[in-house]
Image (cartoon, rainbow, N blue to C red; front, side, top):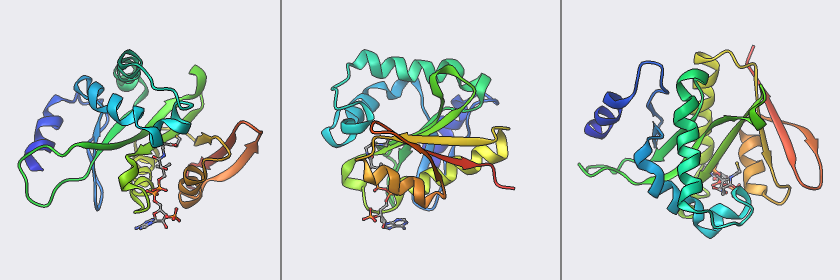
Length: 185
Ligand SMILES: CC(C)(COP(=O)(O)OP(=O)(O)OC[C@H]1O[C@@H](n2cnc3c(N)ncnc32)[C@H](O)[C@@H]1OP(=O)(O)O)[C@@H](O)C(=O)NCCC(=O)NCCS
């Protein structure tokens, strides 16, 4: 993994998001080369159900998401990370098993936390672990005062992540539950 980390670190500019190591994962800022892997991740049935309203998005849509991240990450200091689980001993790059990060809500000042994991990795606490790591980055490295997370009410697993992160419910409609986490005092 040292070589993977070195490779990606060398490509990031000083203002870009950092690579982050957690107990079980490597979080690496998205790169243009991730489009195909993210497209495959996002079109899986379990992933797309709530994330993309069950639509099988085109490669072009995945590309737009990555380009939008690349266009704003240096200015906003927020964006997305690809999640890797480093194999115990291997020189091969680990595949992308998920993503998490932040985006502005409808181009306004508020930001929201987004996350997703390949279904075979659900039930292990990995999404929560990754989100705690990027929240730590957010509070330490930016001046945002709070972060929201929104999901469809039936997406109980997503609500579970929000609760484990310590988020509190702000509003609920038939179409959406909105949670908030404020900057720690
Ligand atoms: C939302 C999503 C990431 C949640 O995945 P998840 O596996 O339920 O969440 P975590 O990785 O935090 O794992 C928590 C589960 O692992 C269990 N767990 C096991 N070991 C754990 C540990 N060390 N720490 C925390 N939880 C642990 C928890 O008890 C919990 O299980 P439970 O749901 O049966 O109570 C996943 O369902 C997903 O990718 N969905 C598709 C995309 C999506 O809808 N994203 C949300 C919209 S932004």
